Amino acid sequence: MPNSSSVSEFLLLAFADTRELQLLHFGLFLGIYLAALLGNGLILTAVACDHRLHTPMYFFLLNLALLDLGCISTTLPKAMVNALWDTRAISYQGCAAQVFFFVFLVGAEYWFLTIMAYDRYVAICKPLHYGSLVGSRACAQMAAAAWGSGFLYSVLHTTTTFSLPLCQGNAVDQFFCEIPQILKLSCSDAYLREVGALVCSVSLAFGCFVFIVFSYVQIFRAVLSIPSKQGRHKAFSTCLPHLAVVSLFLSTVMFAYLKPPSISSPSLDLVVAVLYSVVPPALNPLIYSMRNQELKHALWILMTRCVSEAINFHSTSADD
Image (cartoon, rainbow, N blue to C red; front, side, top):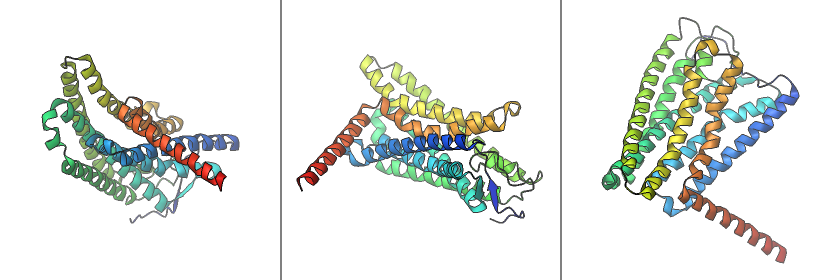
């Protein structure tokens, strides 16, 4: 990606100035990162190993967990390394890679959240047509479209952003390479190309948002018309986790990018970036497992099996 500037590296925003606070941030983010790895890893393993979870809903959940793992692994490890070694530098190529993978994974996740809303809509509002509308072939096509759209979306924004000449230094006011912060470093008359691409993306994202809202309006109308209390509870239990994840994802992203400039500050931008890039991947596994009895049962069987195998291994080792 050509660039007329001579920038060879960027300087990321530090979480703290003192060494003690840097180590505290490192420990905190290490704990969050390990929790995200464990939670999403357990969901991936449970869905892959339990044949009862080989359904469209859990297939999309598996993809979501994979995207969450990739998303948090794109931003947090570099921030932890910088905090541990008391540095702020990231190479030009590393910054471009970070932007590419973050936009790719977040974009694909938003598409999957939209697809999951459609899956719940068909399951509750059109149950007799569920097998034909959300069959294995349709699931594979929708998943491929989500991954492919995220990839193309990322290629568009990454190439556009890093082809701009940078005239305002190399200090990025964020703990990872974020497109709006990089645009602040570009020449004032050059960033309009990326702004145009952003406007198209926002329009497309708004269309997905309207679809999700419309789907849930129809879902709630259908659920409230179910005569039995047990039937309403079962229907709500399959929708509420997804609705919670969508709300968490959209509220943090919208606040990050649509908050008034008057309340913007480096410290607030840093906190908001953590909320939308770090918190959802760590909390999503907990949200999905809290009310999902099938997933909790599969996770319990998986952990019980692991504990039993560990006990048998130690017993065998002791006998030898």
